[in-house]
Length: 142
Image (cartoon, rainbow, N blue to C red; front, top):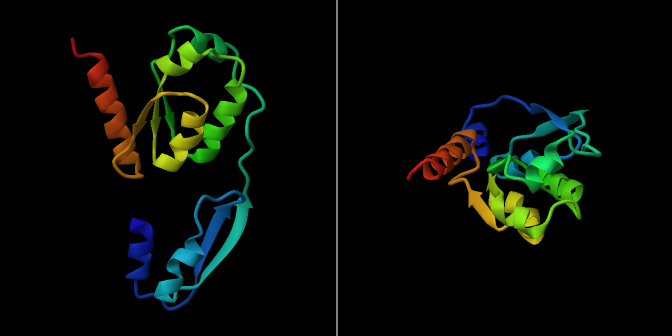
């Protein structure tokens, strides 16, 4: 939202070129339409989901190798859920703290019975780092 407001308040003379990914979670053109700013988007890259987790990750999730996992996008969360489906038990899902950028990111994890979910105060890198730091501090407090 901050980006939309910043661009909307700018004195632009022409359209904005927006190189973007094939899969997007938001429509910048629609968000800027009320400001009468034209967006010319061009899909310049594609992110492809992994077909498997790296060796040792499932074992680490089953054990206690990981305390938390950070999720910045819904698509990443959905892919993680798919790659762990049937491979880790409910106890591991309950034990792993999933720290999420926003509620839509957390939804697939909640549906998959990951129960310890933290949400950033706002969808930003700074808020995610604050969430992660608060988690670490909580874990290290006697």
